[in-house]
Every structure is written in structure tokens, then in C-alpha cells.
Image (cartoon, rainbow, N blue to C red; front, side, top):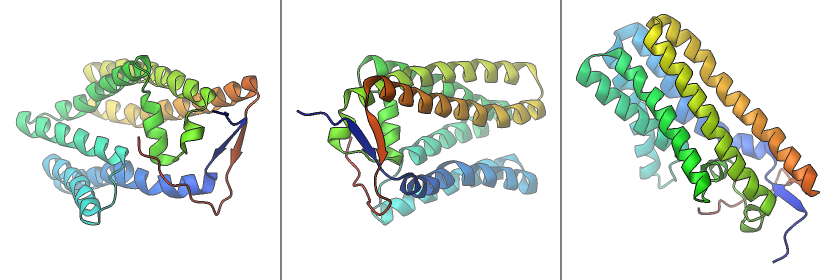
Length: 223
């Protein structure tokens, strides 16, 4: 099979238009809802409110026969585990410990997925940027998905170690403040490094990355 010397990906505006609703629904709205309800009504209503929104969002997608994004699945499962643990023990520390442990497990999952040749980064990428079979099978992109899965595993474990140390040695207020910066910063560094990593791989292989026309809408490819 002839492999393309040019990788064609969806136009960045189409990618943003597709990704923003998923991020809002799966991450930002539950987080904002939790903070607002926490200030108004306390911990338990905040926990239940955030979980209720995530479950309602999933239910609405099911009723409308629309696919549930991987991000919404992960968020809902994490909220469910955190809420059950916190309500069962009455400890807010347990609530924060759940995503900390989840970060560690995510790092392990990324590492194992790279080792078995089914990198999780590829699955996440297809949630936000559908690619056709020919593009996905390009050796440069295959190597990129594998390498970035290993990189994501490393940053997840570093994030886990710092978060666990903060949780066990500092006050909840300090933990929340630092974590609110650490999480986005870690994610930003991961994506920035991945972006330049891809550019380096493309440059060394002589492959050109090209955005499709803005009007073209790619069809998601099942994984």
C-alpha cells in the first residue's frame, strides 16, 4: 500500500468546533457546578450535583442516539467513584484522593497500551480529530501515538506523585489552589511537547502535515 507523503488532518477550526462542546460537557461544567453548589449548599449537594449533571448528559445522548465521548465516560466514572467514596466515609480527603489514584492508573494504562501496540493517545485523538484509515496507518503517526502514550504515562506519574504529596502534607485549601494550577499546567506541557514531537517526526521523515479545507467534514472512523 502506498503511504502518503502528506498527512491531511481536519481543519483546526473544525477540530476546535468539535472539541469545545466535549470539553465543556465533560470537564468544565461539572467542575464549575461543583464549586458553585459547594459554596451555596455544602459538600454533599455539590458532589451529587456534579454527578447528576454528568449522568444527565450521558442519558440525553443515549435518548438522542448520539455517541458518548470518551471524555464524558471518564468524567462520569470518576465522579461516580469519588462521590460514592466521599459519601460512604464522610471525608472530603477521600474525594480528592480518588482522582489522584485515577491519575496513577491512567499513567499505567497509557504505558501498557503503548507496550501492546494499541496506544491510548490514538483513541483520544480520534475523539477530537477523526482520521481516515490511510492517515492512521502512516508509520510516522503510528510512532507518534506510541511515543506520546509513553510521554503521557510519565507526566501522569509525576502529576500523581506531586498531588499525593500535597494531599498528605498540606491543608485542603493549599491543595486545591496548587492542584488547580498543577492540573492545567501538566496538561498544557503534555500537549505542547506532543505538538513539537510530531513536528520533529514529520520533519525527519520528510512528511508534510496539511489541514483539510475548512468546509470538509471528516467522517469518524470506528476504533
